[in-house]
Image (cartoon, rainbow, N blue to C red):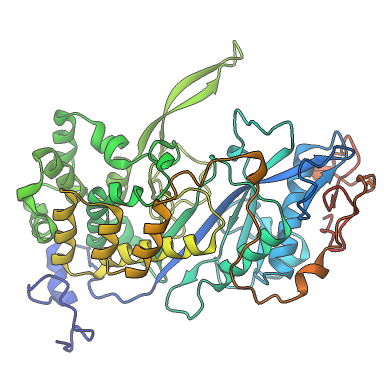
Length: 514
């Protein structure tokens, strides 16, 4: 029943007395759990794909696909090619999808010096609220080491990051859908096995100090993830379970791979028993101990005894073997490194990935990055996946502890991804993912289906698409743009490239050169 303290009538502690903020303060000095926060859940998506490039005079391997590729002069520098690909994408995002987008030039939100170096249109969106801008950046790490189609096209890895979306807004997904429709309608885009769909989940408003202290809801989320990670992986392509970019935490994290003696030491490095009492009580509201092994109980206890967020998330990193070039011999050697698994916390907590000063989002956004899903440009898949993650995140924030315990209990038996969706109260997602998991080989790349087809998602663009670029001609590309100035006043070694329709003329919507 709704009351003065809980206007929604939600007893979040499974029958326990509802506590006020004053009640919570003595539980841990300086810690106030945002117990009845109703701040909206927000999310953002990161799209990854490979963009094809042809050199002037090179035959078009897919002449029947009238969508755009970039045609450049032989010898064009790599940074020029990347810049022109980004420019083409920015044109479509800005002028067709009508979303505010800029080129990625540094930090997650650029400083004044970086903004001053942007072109006029990018500078014009600086006045918008932080993270209301879309970001486009080159991603060389998406290129395949052994690409069977490297001789057909030159490839440029691209990441397109959406603005922060507020789930309480009507039509919060519409800009993402419009961007996907536009990109797929204009360009040939390839979803190689190296690509992923990254989803960043967070809150509209946050207290960074409380995040650093590892709030109770975050411990609940990590505990819940520890037991539903396997069912969630069953909703994505089977290759994701061994993908180095999203290794399961329950198999590859430091927390899981340390031996029992090391785990006992890690637990003792956290809160002492007398300090742990309030959290111990919270932990047992959601933990069905009778079905958990002693090892599982110890791993969960570490999650709840960690003194702060950084101590917790450091143990949720995974050890990866990366190939590193040996300077003296020029060969590649495997080198163990700490990396991010199925969850990334670099936006949630400063210093979440130690010894990684290049991380551009170091606790800036307060978001958890979920990395399970394969690369996709399918609006329906993205929307359904976001719906699942938002529900799971919100369950940890303010769900009934009995519901959380029930899910953990069931996960110890025969429990699949669809079972989890039913328990989350998502019947539409059950129907969608039932159909998806019945297509186990839909990601197989073949030359005839190398590119994602035009979207069938409803579009509000009408007849604008056919007029935006000139239709491709059947003649080979032979036009070149005049020399352009390279960054830092360094002149390029070759003529600057131009964007062209495949095998034809420069498109009418030619991307800007600067």
